[in-house]
Image (tube, rainbow, N blue to C red):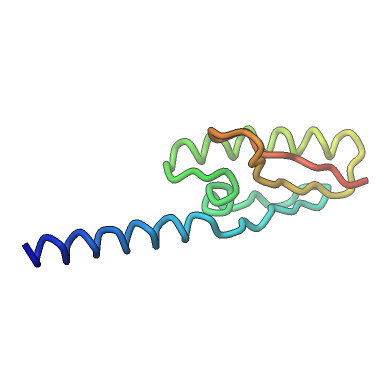
Length: 98
């Protein structure tokens, strides 16, 4: 019975540590127009909250389309932030700086 309690307590501690790690603030992605360099997939995955390689790849393509569109409309720089207003993986918030 003591071994069961020990395993249960360890599981709870590990789970609470994982939740605490998930709440860390995310650094935004900043781009200067004209665009010269793609962001790494790791950086895009961090901002969007994605772990899957292919999902991150596809979302990076879509994200860069939105960033290029903002640059084409006359923005000097673009900042991409995670949008935490919706509960389930919302699209990122793209802010154009003029």
